[in-house]
Amino acid sequence: MGMKGVPPPPLIVRRAMHVVWPFVGLGVSFLALPLLLAGCVQALFTRSARLLRVTGVVVLLVWVDIRLLVGCWRLWFASPRKDSPTWLADHERLLVACLDEALTIGRRWVGFEVVLDEPMWFGRDDAPLVAFARHAGPADSLAVAWLLARTAERLPRIVLAEALRWDPGLDTILTRLHSFFVPSSSGAGDDRVGGVARLAASLRAHEVLLLFPEGENWSPTRRRRLVARLRARGETARSRRAAALHSVLPPRTRGVVAALTARPDADIMVVAHAGFGRLTSPREIYAAVPFRDRPFLVRTWTYAAPEVPDDAEGIAAWIEGCWTEVDAWVSAHERP
Image (cartoon, rainbow, N blue to C red; front, side, top):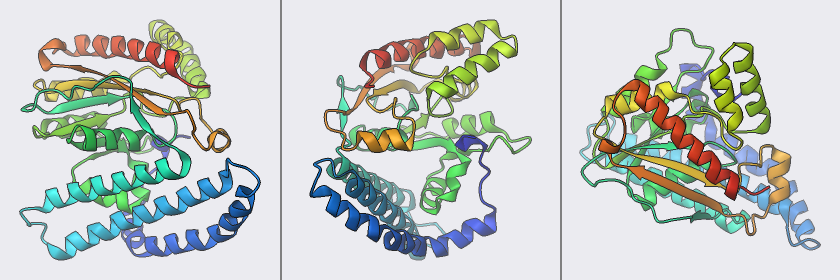
């Protein structure tokens, strides 16, 4: 079961996690001490020092997350009614600072480096941006959000799985920044497409809506299951299109249509990345550390609003065509 099928924590649990999360960090750090010591010994005999690197990254990222939560506490104590004129700007700065820190940790400890294949165009300055990104590999959503926030200087408002509410830091700051947590598949009657549309409609000119149309991380197993499921349903045309894609999953067009219908004035960016998509299990990720000569390579295509169809059928066909281009680029650049 992917994250989309994991229900969010009940409200009382979410509130309790705000209190216990720093203690979870202390517990993780304490339990990691033997692994850090063993990793130091291992580093004497092998240059990869995988155990030390991976354990160190996990512990440090846990504390970045705790810093994010504590920063949210501090901002709430400063403005309990959330009526500070800098309420949103303060949270934006906090999020970008934590993204900076997370990417710095990844680069220094395991060699996770974001590299652009070509220069990026972020759309018109006076128009919002909607970004549709490939979803595959470890930390891809984090890297894409950082790239948009830091390089494009646009605050990402993200459509993400409701299961991520189990992380109180992400839950708090992204809720305050009006991102949209897609209800889990177990919730009956949830209005997912409507939530995407409302988020898109509320975009400001300096913001970007970040959406992952595939809905889940690519893996060979998920690709095979999806193709088989479509064939079993008798959806011959869709199954053929899915089978023709080798490195991505076919996009779910309803969310794309909802976003672009709600904001026809928005420019559109399609984001592909390669380098980590074939790492689909913890064992494969661990074996690839450190990521020498394996950059997180990013390629983008940006379209001004008038270049994109404005009807539902045309938008669906357009994003499917874009994903065919994404698949070809990823297949040509992905690492084994």
